[in-house]
Structure formats: C-alpha cells, structure tokens
Image (cartoon, rainbow, N blue to C red; front, side, top):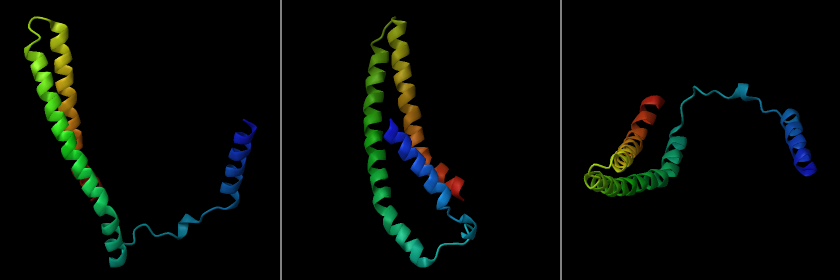
Length: 111
C-alpha cells in the first residue's frame, strides 16, 4: 500500500513539474497529405477487423435470433418462456442495430 501511495505521489508531482503547454497546438489546422496517408495506412487494418467482427456478429445474431424464435414458438402457453424469448430477440435486434449504425453515427458526429 505504501508503494502505491508513493507511486501516486510521484505521478502527481511529475504532472505538476512537467506541464505540457497545449496552448501552442492548433487543433483547427488540417492534416497534411503525408499525415492523411499515414493515418489511412494505420486505419486500414482496424477497418478490416471491424468489418470482419461486424459480419461474424451478424451471423451469430441471426443464429441466436432463430433460436429465440424457436423458443417463442415452442413456448406455448408458458408466459415465462415467451417473455424470455422476446427479451433474447429484442437484445439481438438492438445489438445488431448498434453494430451496424455505429459507423454512420461516428461519421455524422465527426462531420
């Protein structure tokens, strides 16, 4: 515990002693073409990974939605099983909507 307190004290002291002057940074300045191409090269693997995860999640969601539908159909008059199947289906649909809408929302917010 004493080591943790000492570490926190050192971090706080270093933050006060070595301040970064952020006033000199112009955040409204656009990226140069070199910076833009470097950013695009760095983001390509992330975009590919996101696309793959999105499609795998969609396939998994579709399978889980079918399972929830079967559970709903076989529930009969058991209201507890029907409600559980409805909750599963609702969760899958909301999850898929979030996964597919998120890039568009980020694009809109960044514009």
